[in-house]
Image (cartoon, rainbow, N blue to C red; front, side, top):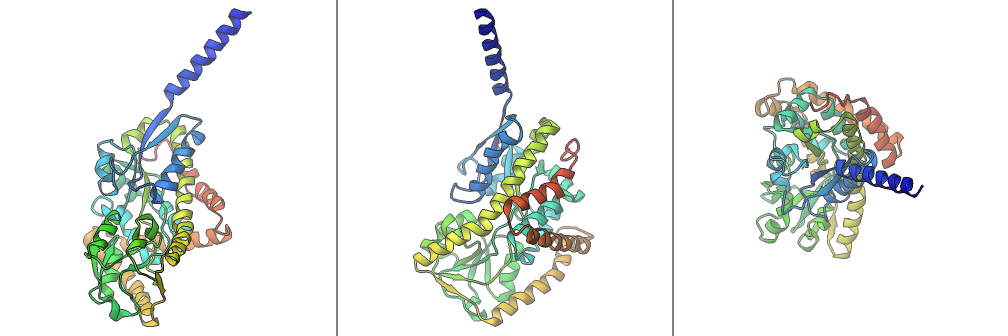
Amino acid sequence: MKAFVTAVALATGLCASIAAVEARELRLAPGGPPTHPAHTPLYSTLAEELPKETDGALTGTILGTEVVNIGGMKGALQSSVAEVGNVLPLYYPGDLPNSALVGDLAFLGRDPHVMGAAMTEYVATCDECQAEFARMGGVFAGAGSSDVYVLLTTVPVRNKADLQALRLRSGGAPFARWAEYVGAVPANVPVSDTFETMSQGVIDGTMGSVSDLTAYRLVDLARYVVELPLGTYHATSNFTVNTDTWRSLSAQERRGFMRAANKANVAFTQNWGFERPDEARQAAREAGLEFIEPDEELVELTEAFVEDDLEAAVGIAESQYGIADAEAKISRFQELVEKWTGIVEDAGHDPAAIAAAIQADVWDKIDYESYGM
């Protein structure tokens, strides 16, 4: 009997050891520091959910920015330094023109959850987008969105005159076009370099999330928060999986990965779009920053830009991105924004309900034998 018990114990231990050996640890690259929502909760949630959603088959270890930063993400994925990475399509419009196209529609953004869901469904169901990711060597696994961008500046901006020749960091083409439209000077500066360039006086401010005040310590430099709605940054591929890594996973593991990624994407949008901005505004008030409501003329000028830019986006897509049917694609994205506006409102902006809706409407309809292959 004792021998039997010993044999059972050994067998159980052996099975546990085999299971442990079989667990696949993925190298995860958020491209941002722990203080940024791209790290926590985006990648920290993925790392937490992966073993739960894959019955322990997949785990993850998060790489720091000293290994992979946001600017080097494409190369890190292609070289397999990272197996899952945070890719921003507006950084690579030549590689991902169809994804960049809808990212160019930033100024449509008025609700972060709506824009994250619309971007997710658009790219996941867009054949051209999928082909572009495949050529780049990645698989799209969902998007998220920032809060509605504002101006964070070292000088006050109350009207159009205050913007003339003001040097502002731009996170992408649509924000650069707005800056030029109103008379400011856009500067193509990675968000991670905002503090340094602002502290050196290279720029006078940034078009960005108010949470950048705390994520990148801009609360120590900025003096004004200008509450001018500048749309959302939703041109994200939060989890871009190296193609070889994706192909090495079973269909069941891919499905579990997407369930984990979907939860993380919504947690990210809830945090970046709502929670962190509230915390950052409180920190700004405590630091003595002034909140400015711009005059009506500047608000109306920005609204006019949105209308003009929608028309211009077609020409830009055709001339710069080589997309022949840009008007139809823009219309489709607008329809998705309208669709998800209704879904998010019906969900009462509850993150769990929104994640469930995205899972049911998008990821549960994917064929995991063929997706990304």
